[in-house]
Length: 317
Ligand code: FES
Image (tube, rainbow, N blue to C red; front, side):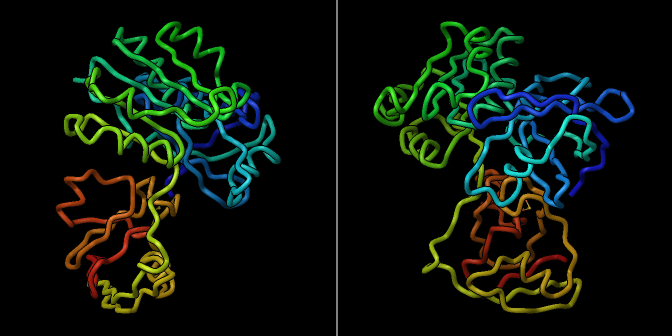
């Protein structure tokens, strides 16, 4: 991981039920590298974990006075969200990476639909601010299980006004029905972040939209059902190592078992840190980093989640 900027926690603020906004400033007081909306930073937490969080205040600045991320309490947390909610204190030192953007808005998209579910509002809020600043024609559909759970609700109302459409599951009796609303493509593109069922519904509702006009960021990579996970042979060509990747381990796990120290960060197929060059093998891509075109090239893969659909995978490592 690349968390090499020393920062101090200068603010902690509840921005919804179970959502904590964390403001970070450079430890020496200097400006932080800027970023476009949709960017995230790696946050090296004091418990040894590294987690990725979207910058809610990145709107295209060349430098930034502070980074703000919003972290949702997750009952199924593997240690990141619980640590932030329970241990993080104002004044504490942390390390973060420079921003990276795997969810950038394309300049040619002038009429934009922004779609957020739950804590997925974090990059979408940044995009809404960027759209407003650039004078773009945008709509923002924001949903949550209930109104108190939607982060930045008052800020969103002030920012987007009548462009904002809210949906709360407890008031509507379930999640937003996307299909009828998206039957006609009235926007150049939709940018969406939220839970997997919402994004799956978006994918199912938009097969007829123009190629490249449905952009989304997921919290977690896709999963292969246990019954479909097969072992395969892995060769690390330059290291001269070969092993079998078991049905229940990842390529990255197998590499570490061989003693190979390979960079990683999220281990969930969303950050791009563990990208590896592929020499041979039918890669089964399960990440949310590579584009469909990059996947089809079969020249690189994220070794933390992606697997081999054939019997043998050869990496240029
Ligand atoms: S470690 Fe993040 S994509 Fe693999």
